[in-house]
Length: 241
Image 1 (cartoon, rainbow, N blue to C red):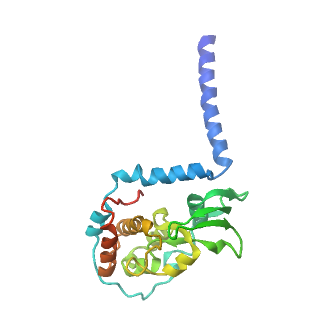
Image 2: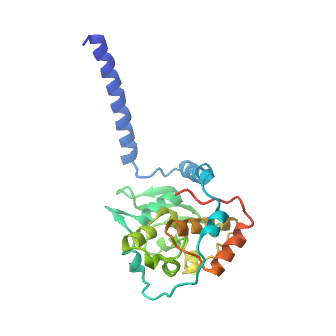
Image 3: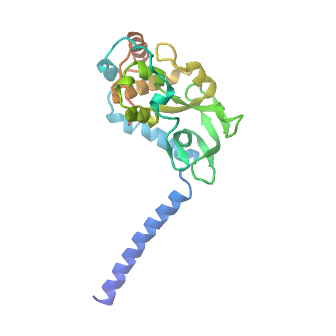
């Protein structure tokens, strides 16, 4: 091999290694990019570009089975796993906080959210979040399809692993104002909707997406409530997986 060819190949190899190392440093320097601009861009991309190929929410609703609510017999939170799933020092709650808050500050473990700003889609409020025994509950993680509702509309027919996956699925989870989450409790679309009316179409579409993905059904009252909301936004599509 000539010295000229060797130098050219060596230069290419060094450039490739440099790109790999830079990427690794960027990842290790912070498990999440916590800049407000980046988080907003990610949300905008996920709700516009990625959704364009998704089915219309109204069409998906029409395909869901409509049945009566099954008995709540046998339901407990443990049927959907023992709390949040964990990966090393991280858990699902921290992942969703990092996704839904902006200007976040992380602990040294790279995943625990210590503080951030939360623009709550359910109420329209802006919440200054600080992690702590007396403050963490201000921002909670809502199961968009309440687990009790899921249990009574088909989840009891899923395997234990499938139910745990459902309870920790990004599609099923949204950070929310703590008080709003408590008010929702086990409600479905027929008994509770976000006070922020501008978010109701997106909220109902997400519920439908979860029910489609996990082979759940809707009650007659739930179906009618969803259809009424979607009538005001016929172009609403399911969120991207």
